[in-house]
Image (tube, one colour):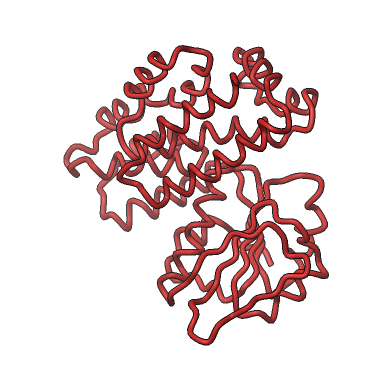
Length: 312
């Protein structure tokens, strides 16, 4: 059955009493937030172990007498079909499958949508109605005093990608209540921090220039998260495109000025480099989740490693 991602995020008491989840869509930052939220809900109830899996073909859930509850996390997992999923229903473990939209997963999404014993969660960019819902919840839970003009300014100004929107709300939360005015918020949200994704376009520059630009743009752990998800978007375009023609079609239209640069980057990648890039994404994300206090350092290392793979 279908579960609205925003309802899950805003309702702390939302019951997730099923063991099969399929998270899809094309909004990477919301997909990651939903995944983290589901795991945290289980962690509040009992001790859990997170295990990454690559396939559920012939899957056997070996559970010891005193072991923690297991949450199996499958990203683009092999063997996700109706027959194999039915075998997982009666297991005590939780299975979270994550796969961005493609023609290949239409049948799987239909199965999850029609199955009352599992959840499908589609994650897309936020529309105006969803931003209003999130902003209302934020104001009420944080007991903020925001006038009508400021409210509608925020609805229009806040990013359509969830993690970027959340980062902006956290900046507002850092202000004193008396400082939450339209002029102050305009300055806060229009400050030159929207160019973090431009770091990806520095890959052909010297390391010294990259380091200087990174230190100028990336100040906090939240900055690292925004930067990481921006870079991850570009990296996944490379990894998931089977050929240059497919890649060109996936380049967003708003990046028309950077189109030639992005194509030049893609032309440097073969299968081996794509595999290295995918491994780098996985390792970096794992580190950033565990070592948030060192995220500034790992963010820079991540960028320099992308350059190393690209130009090697």
